Length: 379
Ligand SMILES: *Cc1c(COP(=O)(O)O)cnc(C)c1O
Image (cartoon, rainbow, N blue to C red; front, side):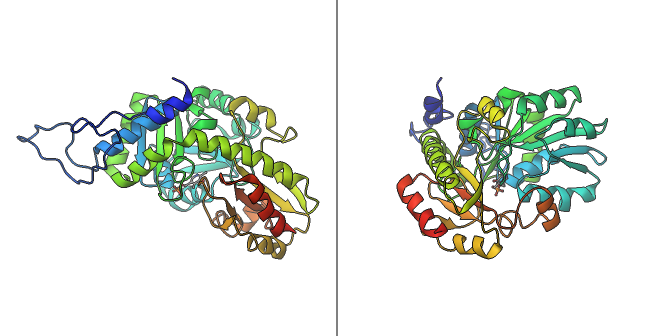
């Protein structure tokens, strides 16, 4: 089945009780049994919910995986993966990932004696340098947030397999429309469904997709035992979002490309981070593993003072100043004080994240209007 058809039909069986074409929101906590243990596969909604199951099936199909699991947020999905580990296990992760992932690893899990190595994943030699007998998990994010670095998923997956470690890829920025990490050898794909999957800035949710049945069973056990499940209304919203993912992503890519080039040609802009540029350091890999370059763009101004960045951030009208990304409307963000404030300043600067960096989530409005808005703000 081709992608566009899959986005619309994945997991969408007519409701067995009524034939409703849209999966109903099963807003129920429990299910009546005819006799003890005699039920229709649904006992209690933390473990089973038909709306969630329809979504999980859709997520699996659009990521070319066998199994999907939905969680109450992206970080809850990440949290479930870390719970596969034991004290003493080691994780190798990217040094410029989402701030909340870094916070979860350092502030919550280090104290349980799980060791995290933060490396620059654009060079796989950095992974091989820290891999050892305790390495259980490699965690990567590509493109990274907010510097748009690209990890070669196939190359890292070969290293993970040789070391018998699980490779999990945070695919939030690309979305399943632009990149399918399982096809490239990853074991688990993670998404913040809050972003492109939901697509309308109206829900917090996360998910995991995998092929391996044992891994699925372990993660399902964690999902129901730890209880970070999404409610049925939220599952409905993400199911609905997925139906337009392909058309939204096409426009995000078109608008992203126009704005990235416009920014690059602007004399007040010093540097633009976008993997679609032919001279982006990892452009060849991006081109190989992604079918488009998306609508996430970061840039630095020639005047790289925080004051000038703040002036631009407060001057746009269509681009709203807000955290998050992936919605139909355009957002502008200051990573150092907003999305990445949980990463210590020295750590951020060491990884190349300047205090004056501005990040855009380019929406699906008319690109001419978006450019006029940026022109007005940048001056
Ligand atoms: C937002 C985000 C997360 C966390 O997801 P939540 O839904 O906010 O919990 C993880 N990774 C990336 C890349 C994100 O953008």
